Image: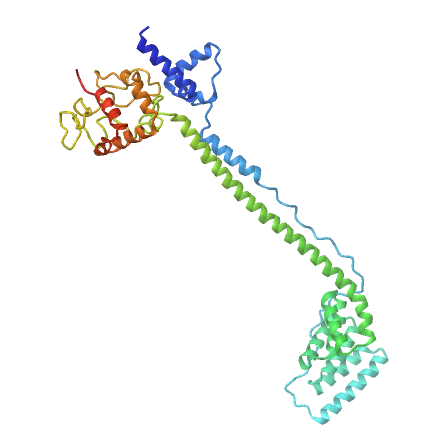
Length: 419
């Protein structure tokens, strides 16, 4: 077997050993099949289709991750019943009672007549005739609509009659006339207790007790306060539970957003890794498979069908190097204009340079040149080569570099054209 071919084969195998993803190239599927037929176990990176996650797989992974982080909703909080003690009555729905006209002028005679009506009402109450007492107190209020005590007295009778709504209307009227009416707060508190409005009743009774304490207020408070405390504790308990549940929902929403962000990051990372595995080594873009020796990532830009970038359409470098070599000892007559023939020969399993090279250029001379291969591993030299490839005019600034200039000159000699 030709020695040159053996060297190229050896170099290819070394490349596969150092970077198994080289075998992922679809054009080498026959070689993978051959290795597997011999019982070889290839790493996952040697496959391009079955062992790489597709975009759909990554998207499924993204959705699964977010779904895993999605919490289950809490059960709805059902408030328990409160065991309360005390007598309550059905709300009275009678039409509102007659109220006094505050625009009426109250004279001394009407005030005295109002007191007589009040005395008559007190007598009726003592006899248990509550309806008659209401009528007398209504007359007293009509005669003196500015008297808060008259409204308070009638509210007391309504409480005895178990008509809490009527009592509250009279108590409110008394408090409008006199905001410091102890009778007004007392009767309203007692009426609210009859309706089961325990917390409101306790507040009114406490105010009444401060304004004008009596034993009746104290007796009612002893029945009202325990219920008011139970309701307050119940409300605080469930306010706390609702607050805790809301805080959990907020925290779970924060975790969900964090999980989505993490999943998006993992997706982008996997896509980047997948893209890297599809273009191992080699030149980016147009040269996805240049084996070994181009550690800087290959020659940028690519030669997709004609000359070096910047335009070498016919041979020679632009700017005054049409045919007679490059200054500073670069023999060969400038860079060849385009690679019209077809891929790079021998030893380029990853796909060669597109557009081809002239038939008389033997790239094995570069691969078999130990000086050039060693130079390609030097980052400084590779940076200079890439700089020249990006802009041929940059060649001048590297001519004075004793390390770079000889390598460029030697490469140019490989593309010297027909001999």
